[in-house]
Length: 247
Ligand code: C5P
Image 1: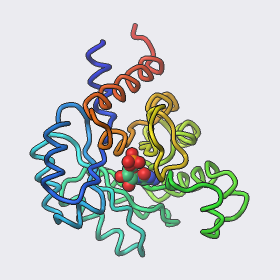
Image 2 (image 1 turned 45 degrees about the horizontal axis):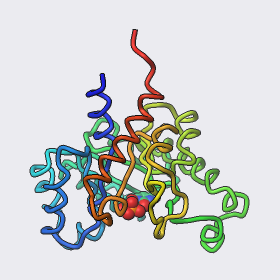
Image 3 (image 1 turned 30 degrees about the vertical axis):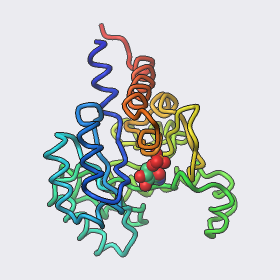
């Protein structure tokens, strides 16, 4: 049982490969493979290397791949790009939540899960007001996240990216199978950098996140493996509390 929880904790950790080139990406893949479940390729690495990096990392790591391009475009363009993500065999692919019912229905049984970004964890009330978001939603970013999670569900997304603050409500409203991925994760002692709506790994999983995304709290520490151990231990302790006892 103990081993199962540790393995399960590793699967729930997504590492953000926010690095500028393949050499640096492979350094992190070699260091962390077998210790985390998913490698996230973001815009920077994708643009510097091209799409072949997806298959190279998948093969090298034997892990799942999250391609985080956060698409925001007209429906036909977004759909065409999602089909390319399926072609490359990515496991998770992000789009900004669109207001179109059923747009992603054709991906309901593909290996690639289309994930809607609700509200970036770097945005808080003042930023949302500056972006022209209605005051009643800007002062409660979690309400905006819930509204967008509803739209994501209606559009046929398999889940959403959301902060650890609204994940509980999202699971209650849209069901356990609706995948929740939470960035903006910091250990208690960490610098928050540009993130604003942050939670600890323990709190995110305790609140019901299926996966947490961690970048700088691993990459910017003198001992990254130690940080990974600390994060997976927090995930495991939250999992123990939320997993009903057997029998
Ligand atoms: O370094 P840090 O842990 O803050 O990195 C968070 C990662 O999660 C980054 O790669 C960022 O692009 C991504 N992300 C995010 N907020 C979202 C969606 C993705 O921070 N809403």
